Length: 342
Ligand SMILES: Nc1ncnc2c1ncn2[C@@H]1O[C@H](COP(=O)(O)OP(=O)(O)OP(=O)(O)O)[C@@H](O)[C@H]1O
Ligand SMILES: [Mg+2]
View 1: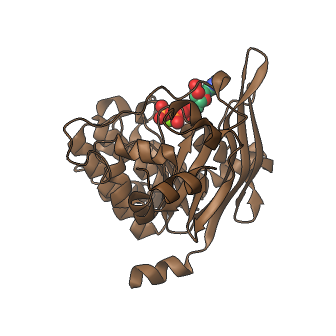
View 2: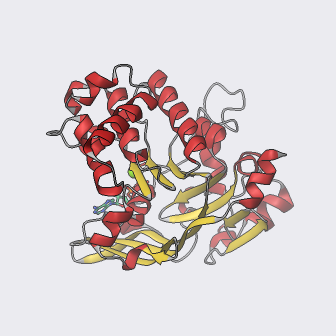
């Protein structure tokens, strides 16, 4: 009941509208994110799933304009607190990065500065975004290290990133990302580089802090177990497009896009996967490279030979199936619903 109430009062925090992110390859631009529109609400965990190469990181990096401008074009609109982030200067964006929007990357070793001690890196974030004197910055940095479960904050404060274990580095990065209590956190596969036990601890930590700070999170992950546990809503990405967006329960119970169905059935941690079989089904073929994406019709069609060709000749449109369930597919209705194929 309480949960339902919270959902109803949630306001939109970020609105991505028709985002196209293209990389220049041999003098031509190819869209890795191709017309993505999406709203993220306050205090919600929005998971993005999809196979490797579908454009998840390209999307995440576009939000804070972190792509290399020399060979990347980012078009569309990304509204955050009434401003279109894509129109802001680097200076204006720097004020938002860290303070309002925090980022947690897959590999903390490349995201952290190898030449700066952990304490100094946390304080740097506080220095830019919070009006604190040096003593209270240090106090806050130590508090943050404790909050993210570092056992000896005093020691870690004065260590360099390479002196920490992978799990501790990731905790330190979470401390930095959350230091200014951002209203939005973008976490791009935050635990992929860690072993399974540490993964669970870090996700637990992230979930706990998210509830405390009440921030919205865009959580990019390959782990559907994590999605089931943490996400409020889920977006499924394929070849640069969001092919399905739905409430987390809905997407597991009633996945409609052929890609979502295949993806969920093929993942070991998915509540929808396995179905007691010893071997998980695999999705035939591969995610197309940017140069080979089928841009005229259904992008997933080449990988679903069991659907008659006539069903996927037309360019797919978005269908709103329920209030919080949208699918980009021209065949979901006349194929799945009528014939009940699964
Ligand atoms: N800087 C770049 N220049 C050219 N192509 C790129 C660049 N970055 C990504 N790509 C291409 O864009 C597509 C999307 O890549 P992206 O890194 O967003 O995938 P992803 O969904 O995050 O995959 P993963 O799950 O492996 O992290 C891929 O085809 C990739 O090869
Ligand atoms: Mg990625």
